[in-house]
Length: 188
Image (cartoon, rainbow, N blue to C red; front, side):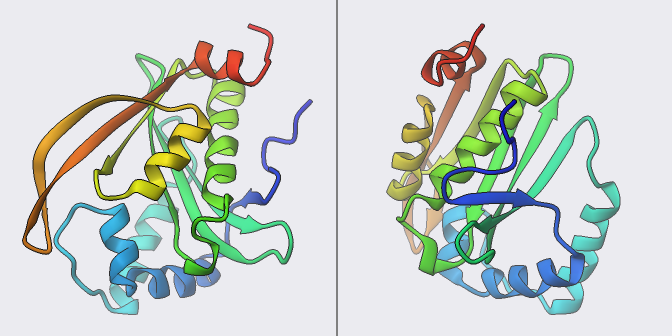
């Protein structure tokens, strides 16, 4: 049996809300990070407002439709990011959202390792058929990371996001269970 929560560089956890609030507040005040993970207009929230949103999210907890995780480094147990699977039960598909909020861990393989754990959980534990995601066309680091994890580019919404006065595309990617199983040498 594989350890579903431990990769080569990271492990996934469920965090104490106060610990998570402190880090998420810091990450949400890094405008580059927010622009990479979110298409909405950039705005700032107080710690109180962020705590209210987080409490609503935490209250919903794990469910058949929602699986949130925090990402910590193996080397020093530092909280560096998150991912969440949002499952559509009828068709056995999920959308994934992921972010490495701590800049010191960008472009070093931590996001790819976290995504590999996410896919392992999705396909082995939840027995999903497909995992999908969207990303901004300017986020080339994320694109490379997702390709390393096995995602394939499936489509593009041309010039649908405006950032810093420039139009950019949204890219749509996906990976199927059979592709992941074959890529990882799993028995089908």
